[in-house]
Length: 145
Picture 1 (cartoon, one colour):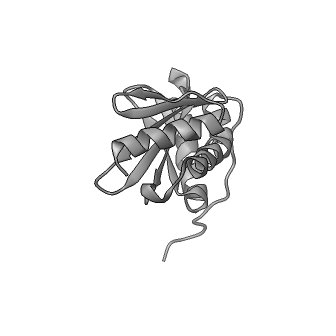
Picture 2 (cartoon, rainbow, N blue to C red):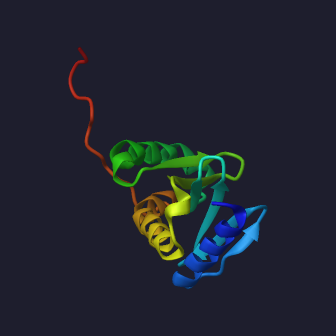
């Protein structure tokens, strides 16, 4: 996928999602249901890198939020092939996902993927916003071999 195709797929996806796509430093930026989404094109490996904003936790909540995001990574990494992260420079929690084989996607498929990621990160946005905490089961129990 080249940059022109990237722009086209972003505009088509944004239209399907009733959002506006704008170009920002070579990135596709859109807001889906009030959630900021950034997409980068990596032409070298034909992949799209998607970043879903989860919000900014309060200064005193960052450690707990980061712990919750790590727990989400542990328990959901195989479900949606993405990663929860915290960007210290902006103090924002972010969900990152890579879409390989970008040139095989059309705008409607891309829109479906973005919708899926926005929907799947709702719980994480609630954790970051202090609305909810999540209790996860324990992966390692007892003594290690």
